[in-house]
Amino acid sequence: MHGDDLARSTQRFIKLLRPENAGAMAATAITWLKAPPYLPQPRKALRPFPAAPASLGRMGALEVRLATEKRDVRHAQKLRYRVFYKNGTAVADAATMLARRDKDGYDKICDHLLVVDHAAKPTLSGKQPVVGTYRLLRQELADRHGGFYTDNEFDLSGMIAQHPGMRFLELGRSCVLPRYRNKRTVELLWQGIWNYVRQYDVDVMIGCASFEGTDPDRLALPLSFLHHHAAAPEEWRARAHSSRRIEMNRMAKDAIDPKAALRELPPLIKGYLRVGAMVGDGAVIDYQFGTTDVLIVMPVAAIKGRYIEHFGGSDAPRHAA
Image (cartoon, rainbow, N blue to C red; front, side, top):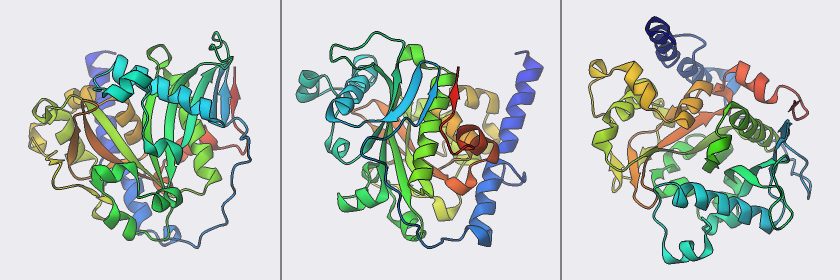
């Protein structure tokens, strides 16, 4: 991409984040907050997945589905260990090193979204390898088991209390093997998430997204960019716990180089922003995983129509060659 093209592309992206632009992601979110048709409505009856969920989507040899048995979850945990600990910056304790799995108590109450490769060599257990995963926690389950994982870093109570008629879903533990980090895998994960969101009538998606590294001064540019251009309105601005809060506003708005800031945003965070997500107040350093975390807030009604059509416009999962 030539310099002029990059500059124009960057400016278009910045404009999408400005509330004054009707139809843009931030404006969509604010419009949704104010428009009467989107006020909380009475709950619909939940439509649970069948005992053995069907595929949530497929593209060529790649399939996205839910874990249906314990060994599926173990495969997801092994993938997370490989990405976070073996190849990443996370620091494993003795139990994690021995098990060679990233696991915690939340795994038992969460649903696990898996991307499997049917063209790859089966594992020793005869299963197709898991190459990508997301962990999904619905609010009704979190409420019965001590809250969301994200509550450890951010105070969600006020935000949830302000929206009592809405159902929240936490997205977490996202990871993909390096060779599968491409547009197809990401789109397939989003297709699976969107089908899950529709199945359970989810209103709001939340979760932590991470920058590599634990020095916020080295992340001053992207953190400040998010603070000035993607901050959630007050009704949605859950804050980092005061004991762990790191200030995101580390640079004046007019001192930010937007092109440089965009280059430093992790792909996952850029993807969230494109579909209409906002960020909370303050960041948190996670020393175990070697990351600096920000809160992502994504009301379903604020997601742009073209993404809804792309990822879940049909009642049936999309298949592609």
